[in-house]
Image (cartoon, rainbow, N blue to C red; front, side, top):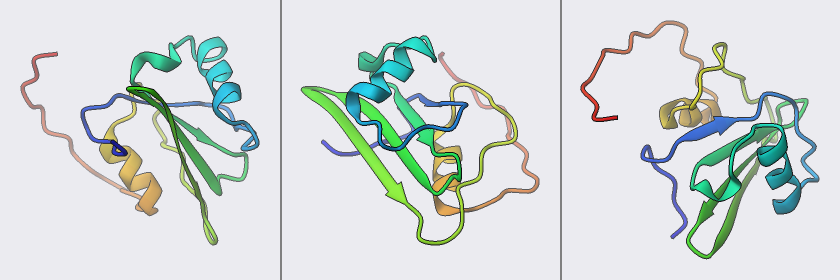
Length: 112
């Protein structure tokens, strides 16, 4: 199944990434730089230096899925606060180019 949702944890790689890296190169960054397990089912987000390209690497049953987007105009904005994990709503806002100047997040009950 090719889909991501708010049930997945998302992690943003802090440094600019060489977009020539594919599955194995990105897995190396995840394992050695982020100290995470690439096959955990988490989604890992990578941006290039100019923030015009984004890659998302995700393990699902049977293998890796790599999502890749190149902007023809504009840039992806990096979040001002580097909270971990990155939320699905933050990812959607970043991909759509929406910059929220002020927001309030109301506390909700969670089992986790």
